[in-house]
Amino acid sequence: MMHCTMEDLGALRAGEASVWARRHITTCATCQAELELLYQRVAQLKSLPALRPPRDRWPAVQATLRAERSRRRRTVGAWTGSLALAAAIAGILLVPSGQGGKLHAELSQAKQQSATLEDSLLQYDVEGRVLSGRAAAVVAELEDRISVLDGTLAQQEQSVQDAQLVRLWRERIGLMRELVNARATRARYVGL
Amino acid sequence: MTVALAVPDVLVARAQAGDEAALEALFRAFETPVYNLVRRMLRRPEDAEDVVQETFLEVVRNIKQYRGEGHLWGWVRRIASTKALMRIRRDQVRATESLDDEPGKPGMHVGANIDLERAFEHLSETSRAVVWLHDVEGYTHEEIAEQMGKSVSFSKSQLARAHARLRRMLDQGAQA
Image (cartoon, rainbow over the protein chains, first blue to last red):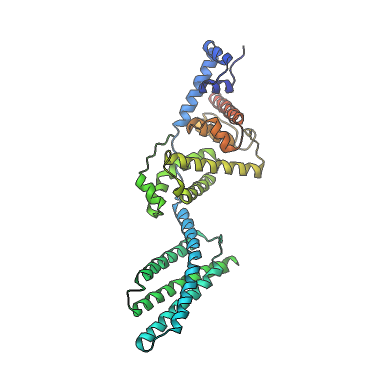
């Protein structure tokens, strides 16, 4: 006696079986049992316990996302750096005299240093360069701090005294140096 | 395992705005169901972990394109299953793995008292993927065929062969 194949049983389960299979299953106890086993297997598969990831992958995801964000920001930063350099040169040319003039010169110098560091960074910040998770996290943290500082500078550029601006710009230079060092160290390490 | 994950719209909106805490909350909500899905499809746990990471990177990169049509889990699950299938295809190309089951491979001997979970692990990755997507996740053969880049009849025959093999393994285990 011919019995249902597993394909027939699957088709019966899906309500797509042939006329022969539909007739056969009503009279064949063997195939009825096989179909019942199929239903049971599927039910058992559905009730298997959830397998849980052995390690937390969020830090790796987060580091990659931050590194990507940093690369995007650096592209914007390159433009910002060029504008800062232009502003610094303009500032030097228009420097006033006296104490105010000294602060103004320091401010221009700080902006110029910052712009130079931005340019230096570009040579280490090639799109797609691989950083380890730890290096990416360090770079991302520095980038975030610079980003916050840039936000402060953008808000306060017109409203605070030059002395405060000089302090903020020097802080930015410090962070930029750390960032360049982090990138340069990595580049040396991988021989790029 | 069936999943009915409800994610608040406000959380999705925050994630779309780039809020890292919201992105992490989404990751936490979906990491286990995604891992479970891809681990059932893939043989090696480390591959499943990699796919979890790849899935969430893609989720985050494309979260702004999610328009709230359908359940978020359905969208995430689709990304995860596609990535797992891509890995299976890539490994097949590398190892020229047969699409059939793999009798005779080390570790394929089925001893006594084998349960369904162990028997399932002995299937090839392609068979595992088809069985899991169809029988557990509720994908249609048309959807599986589209995702795998194969025909509907391929998906159907893989499912039938996988069940026939499971049936044999469980039967042998019971008789041993």
